[in-house]
Image (cartoon, rainbow, N blue to C red; front, side, top):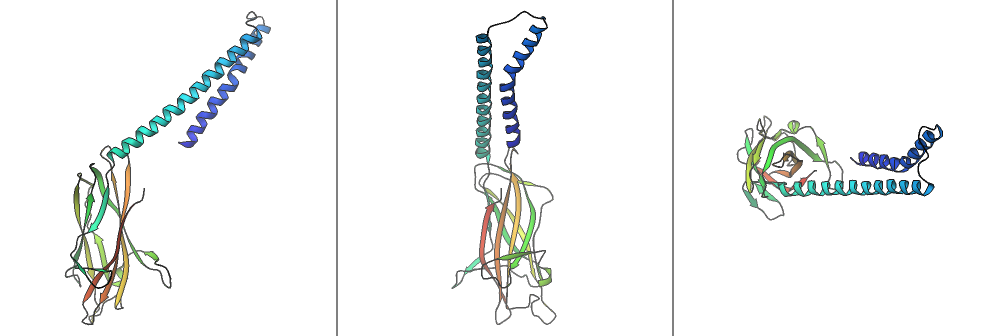
Length: 252
């Protein structure tokens, strides 16, 4: 769009500069060939060139004014119908003595438990074409002093499965309403009863990427919901699912 606008300006400037010159040369050529009679004095031609330049400047100013108004109208329309989506975990939470919150996942050892979460439309506008487009997994970056993660394909080699069950088609979420989702969650053990992830704790981050549009389908938005788990094993070999953090952000 920016390159197109620059091209329009260059064309208008070229017309602005060349039109009086071209007109004068054509008339002079026709006069020299005695096709037409001499027309106008020098002052007349100066006035003619001035009128073309003035008109061209007016047209350029009008073009940019209309373009800016169109941009503002489009932006205001987008804002007036834009949905606001955020996600939150819905499993029961137990607060402990630390800053962590422990999620109750249910029977997920060698069996499918569920991480329940809601997609909430907190706006006055309908969210259309809602769909999950990607599910990502991350592990802490080794030997990193900062809180950094690296992306991996999945958690299968650690005996952990976590994925949200998807709908075949896109859905919509009415204003001030929500859509509930279930993420299947399983932690596998070895034959001796130890957990496949090996240690007394296992930290990972899961991200869900989703898309949606406004009711007019003028613009599509991409959101990302992330949560960090720290799975701890107590002395009795029981699992505790500590929620370290969760976040929402709009990617575009």
